Length: 175
Ligand code: SF4
Image (cartoon, rainbow, N blue to C red; front, side, top):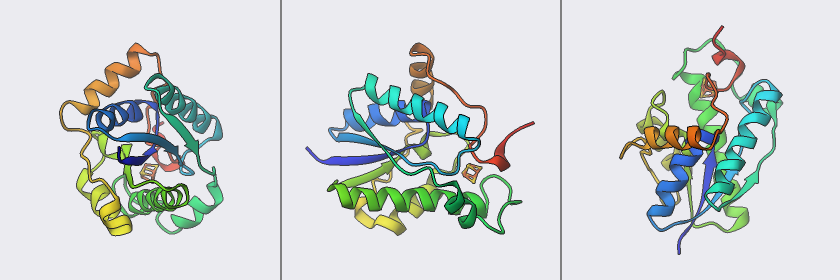
């Protein structure tokens, strides 16, 4: 069975993407790597929800480093960009680069990311970045397809998983 290391951003998105990959015959392991998330309390909530989704669906979750300083450096000069702009490109890139690196260390055949399931995110952009980093190792899924987000949303409500109301970084907090 082909193995995939799935970058997880939160509990809701993870539940939809995990189910889809399992249905497609992959052996899935989650990788929670999101140094973009602010504040730390919010990071802990999303980590717990992603881990819980994994547990319910019977997969393991590997946790990456919560290196906020590194993320801040990565988006330096792009802080004021609108959502979907240059800051987000660097944010996607950083998380997918680390997923690719971790997959190599742990011996996975493929990587994928839950990011494409969000209705607020451009799947084409995410997939282009994934391919540019990991070529054929990156699985260019559009997890929004086949009612992906609705199914993920229903799953998270059923299992009472934490649902956030902003993308993740300090610049995306809605007041
Ligand atoms: S808005 Fe979301 S994707 Fe964009 S930089 Fe912030 S956390 Fe990353």
